[in-house]
Length: 63
Length: 147
Image 1: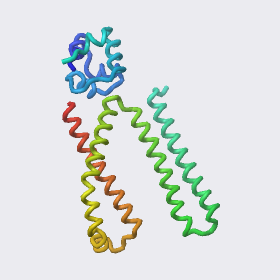
Image 2: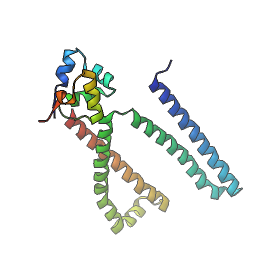
Image 3: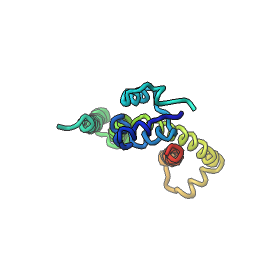
Image 4: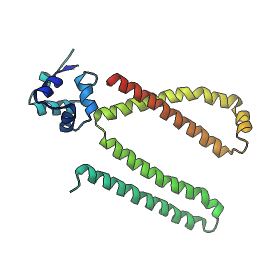
């Protein structure tokens, strides 16, 4: 699954560690999600969407 | 003011230690009452009590560690334990067959003072070590794929 997490994070000038702290996950998890190697669960996807004020579909898209 | 995580850690340690003391001394009190002065008969049950208290500490520690993991960490462990444990069972199966065919003689030759209990513990320990080793390899593979 593709996502725009890296772009959204860069727009806010957050590091992976900062984003990880806001989402209450590890930095490795943020990195794996950004690189498309790990698809987050629905609760985490909602958390990400809420944090960036966007819908899940706007952040994640099927490849 | 301690954070929520610190409070959770301190309470877990307190529950683990208090539970271990209760199990250890409780078991000792029951065993002493049941076996009265038969020290020889009481000894294995006292050991069981000791190990039960250690198992309690391990279980609380395991639960605490699990709750601290994020979802990817949990998935990593589920994957590595599933794959690692399955692999360990497959890897140790031929060894078990060897024991069945000629293992008794081999063990008798190399572990001359071994008791049936020691052999059983050796078998259990061997499987645990194999599981830990295979799970470690599986986890390394998972991280290599996900990094």
